[in-house]
Amino acid sequence: MPLRELQVDMESVLDAMDDYGDAPFTFLDVETGEARPWFDPIVTGEEPDFDCDEDRWEKVPRREAHEKLHAMQHFVHQLDEDDVRERLQLALAGRGAFGRFRAELSRHPDLQARWFAEDRAALLADAIEWLHGLGIEPRYTLRQAPPPPPPPPAPKHPQVDLFDLLVLGAPGGKTELIEGRVFREYTAADPAAARAAFVHIARQITELDGVGWRRRFVADRDDYECGRYRLRVAARMVTLSLAMPRPIWDEFCR
Image (cartoon, rainbow, N blue to C red; front, side):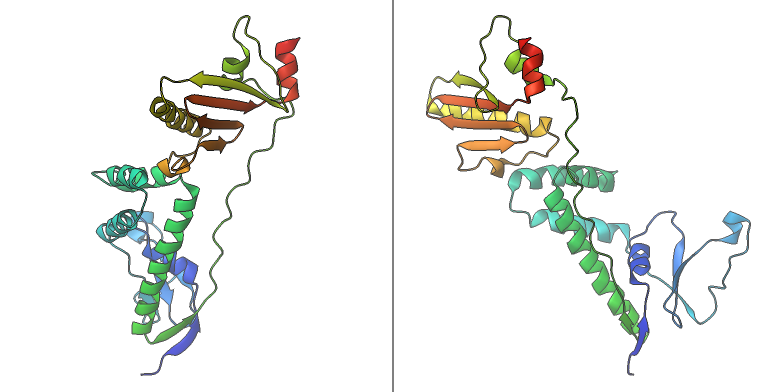
């Protein structure tokens, strides 16, 4: 049986396939390609505006919750960063797994975008297979994945934060502003201790900046930069520098 070409509202079909729980079912009009949610009149007290029992309407199949969980587990299993993989595996254990997975993944925008693309591609393949079973060769346009949000604009009047106070606020401490940065140094007992301190501080400034930590950020590296912070390790010496806006410097020096 040859397939019949039809322009299909594929975005609505994919969203409906990914629904679960108490969300209303969605039906596809196989004559027009329109996808519409159907609300149970017993629940709403109102008659729906179309009869889903008519032959032209086909209920969009949903992906079962266990299938979505399996997809998440497969995604996590193939990650090559063991620290991130372990945290996501813990997130997927027990009740509330979906919410914890989304929250943990949101800390890693690159992985979040990768998960969205892979998950949407798998849904699309399932949707096309379902439509082929109905004798339909779908034609569709999908929206582009949203771009990452732009960084927040710099405040007109910079505010003193924790690291400003730690670096500049020591009583009697001498601090210099060198090419727009201030510096602090720590000398460890040996290079191994310096390396351990470098990794520990790198993680602290990363999480302070609101980014999910990943060990690969400093793997095989002796320098690390995150936001205003720049960290370096050489032999026994760990050096932290902080970009210092002139208004904050002047506030401390007045």
